[in-house]
Amino acid sequence: MVFFTAGCIGALANSLVIWQFSQLGIMQAFHVAISPHLSAAWLYPRIVWGGLWGLLFLLPMMNAKLFAKGTLLSLFPTAVQLFVVFPMQTPYGTAGLGLGLLTPIMVLFFNFIWGVSAAFAIKLSR
Image (cartoon, rainbow, N blue to C red; front, side, top):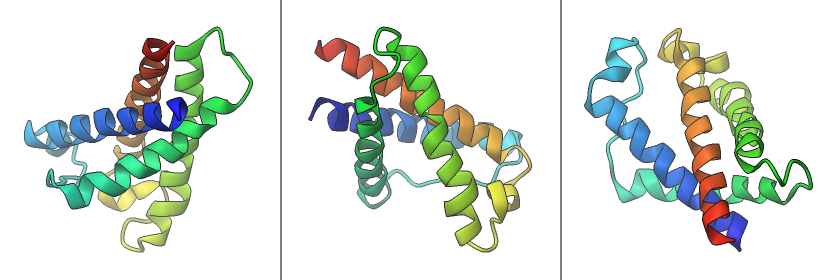
């Protein structure tokens, strides 16, 4: 339950940072065409998936180094987003390059936010 909840908290942090970057024009400055509208319909699936990804924290590795573990585990949802989700959405292509050349870097950064936030939530729960 702790890991799922931590993943949900990480997903909320991730989503709010993505939305804020869009609102501040940072996404546009990097020529990345991601500009979500903050709504329950956008947040809900992201938070549920974040919770499911949070179950990766059950893996018995680097338990003493929780923030390093969060950083490493953030590579899993990044890889799925870049090489499964974006290619399934035809105009975006592999790694979401149809949204802009810096899309992979932004996805990596935002999922890092998820991993570190989830790790922090786990640390606070102990």
